[in-house]
Image (cartoon, rainbow, N blue to C red; front, side, top):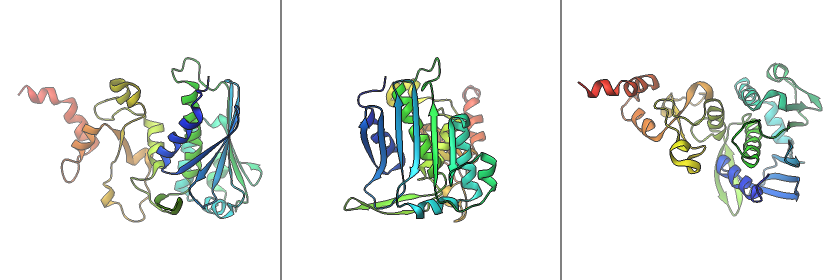
Length: 273
């Protein structure tokens, strides 16, 4: 069953993930509309539809006056489109339909074919909602799917939220580094929430309070990235627990993942000397 606090949980989950104001408009027990709040920028909204506890459909589409945003997406780089496709595959390509200018697009065409966009939408459909044998609740699964679909479209624009003024978002600026929630999400979707070096799992140790928590480390020092550097989240980002992340940065230059992992694995041998 969907938790009766689902809509407030959804709002909090998305706001904490993307640093954006989120409105969740409950139309009926089986339909809610998600949109951005606190901004005069016309971007997109999502329709989240349920068929009981059996099927979920999420439709992401541009808002009515969002032609500039749609045009920006159509100018996305190869690297951005590769991120989009990586999320598409991590979610499950068979569950996602992507349509541009009323034509369904496959991954190869999306990566290689250039055209001006007048419209687009992403449609995700899954039944049953949870995989057989999954320990996750339906509410938790739907929260994650909704988050992932938003991540798909935001992967086509590198952004940083900068300040609110009188309830209005002042601007969105390009930022390819540590504050980009899309890069972080792609890393964690692919690599999970277990420390790459020591195997520490926050949820296993702390229970639900530790669920979906871990730090993300850049294998290239952020200060050393040039202005044009494009982060490749599957290559450049690694999940680390707080201790290992601190140890990585204890020296200058910072330690490599492989070096610290070797030190961790051989720590008993060193202590016996």
